[in-house]
Amino acid sequence: MKVLVTGATGLVGSELVPFLKKQGHDVFRLTRGAAHDATDVVWDPQHNQLPKGRIEGTEVVVHLAGENIAGKRWNPKVKEELRRSRVEGTKLLCETLGQLETRPKTLICASAIGFYGDRGNEMLNETSPAGSGFLAGVCQEWEDACAPARQMGIRVVNLRIGVILSSKGGALAKMLPPFKMGVGGVVGTGNQYWSWITIDDMVGIIDFCIKQERMSGPVNATTPGPVTNYEFTKTLGSEIGRPTIIPMPGMIARIALGEMANELLLASSRVMPNRLSEAGYKFLYPSLEPALSHLLGSAKPH
Image (cartoon, rainbow, N blue to C red; front, side):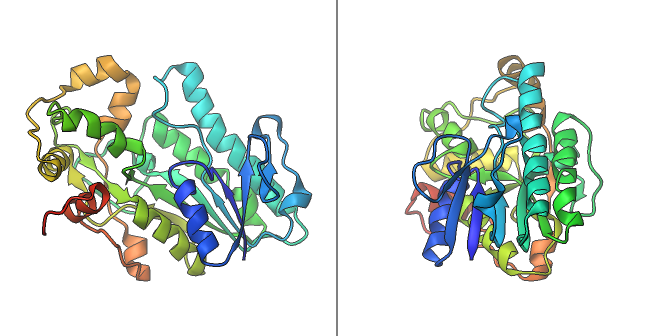
């Protein structure tokens, strides 16, 4: 198939593109930078520019683009950029797809478990209502921005993505240096749930949702084994053979990271992938210890 991918150079996109190519698909990258080859299509969401002619005939679109949520300390300007890069870019893409002579059958659009907000021990699934807070608001707008595509008969999947674990980037790569130095530890109370997914399963889930035509609407891209921050910390320390005795109190996290700490580190989201499980997706790494062992190349038997 002809597949169009936005955010192709990001953590997920850089793994997804070669995976799709190996499967024999023609993959085109929608990029905001300069085109490197004939498969790159340049767009400018900020100025509402997306060349319809270049994406005509696309059968599947995987939309992953958006500014890094943890790239800069949040302030009103940064928060607006995070919102705009997701909502306005998605709206432009979906409106343009709806105007094509031959519209794609499927749009897989990234969202995030931030949709649910800080919910403590509550077990959350795709039918759970949205939470409160900045990220919950952004995620709702992000998913709503897909309406023009849905109204034109395109099958839309909104992937509510958890904490992606990869040795090449994201949260795990940032955590490894302090943990390897023995200064890693529990954040806040440690009771907050972190709902995670390996990069391998993230790519597998996108592929699954492309192929499963009955999948549409919100889909939680998390494993069935969410863990508390305490459990995550102890498991990671065990995998790399380092102590995890230096905690980061919530107050220190807030001083260091500001508002971002509340929503990314201290918020609790116990999210279950009900729709994937019901549809028959088989997780490569449903539990944390083997997942970390795989990602970190540990030789420990499990």
